[in-house]
Image 1 (tube, helix red, strand yellow):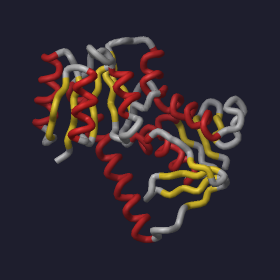
Image 2 (image 1 turned 120 degrees about the vertical axis):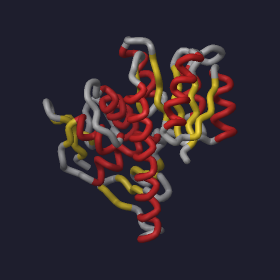
Image 3 (image 1 turned 30 degrees about the vertical axis):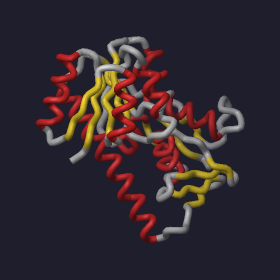
Length: 234
């Protein structure tokens, strides 16, 4: 049974989310402020965190930033703000996805299922890779990728990537030369069919370029195919 931590100071919404997740078979704990969220996340080691942006004591963005220092747990952020800045900032700080209030409980549960399914898939792939070739990294151009150890080296130097940046780079690199739309990347990397705002992909691509490109404004590795999407040139 997957463990989920839900953090929101709106108690009615908090209990509604908890009820729907429990009904779908998840073990759920809750927190009502940022400090409690950090404490419970580190103590309980949940499989996923649903995290509101507007929280007392510490806001959700700061909670996300602090947790990303020592945890790779998937984080789904909730925001009542419509400003694009807040959404992008959350993704840059390490959130895996976001939902804008108000939202349906059905959509929330669908997102949670998809995120957890993607985590399980990645773990299974890593385990299979480790079993078949435990000491062998995949070499793609200037990158040495070791899914089992969750590491990527560029020119022999480790890259400090956020979890979803890692997943995205591995997918693009192992499919070098193929062009993927933003929608296809959402489905293949995030693990669900997504309709609407695909800014999530653009933010993570930008984050990757800043870490792997000598000049992020003139990318050598991840190419934008205008009107279509992205491809890894290697």
